[in-house]
Length: 193
Image (cartoon, rainbow, N blue to C red; front, side, top):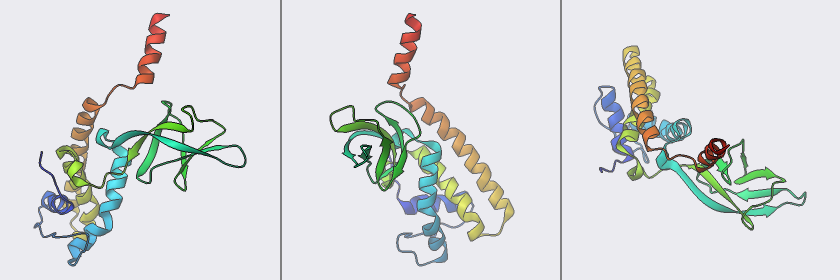
């Protein structure tokens, strides 16, 4: 599988718009085009990860607990966790504040730890599947188009490209999703009745 860099992805976004590939480095931008991509790149990556919840960015691990003076339990969350999806296999509205998962009075189940499944910020572009790179490039094209050109037809092209790439990626992401064990267990309980 080909590994893409930030520069490759930004140049792909320019190609999507029919513009010349002239981005050389968005981490140290010098040209106006590079400055535009530097401004939006990280935001678009985070927004796209949160919206799509791709399988390659879903991780699981046990995290340690701390008990506060009021008796409530708090669990340290990795700094690269964008969103906690499951705690000990259960989905609910978990809040992350100051790098800790706020649980309240629910004690840890595994000693002084809790098992979390979370959406991870993936900054290493070498881990991106090709389909994700395509979707990211179209999203960047849509975000940067207004700043790079005032052409409304180009903006419509970017929006259309985003929609097509999103539909294609969602179909692939669904096929790669693994069944949730808790859901399967509940199904088995109902089936046996």
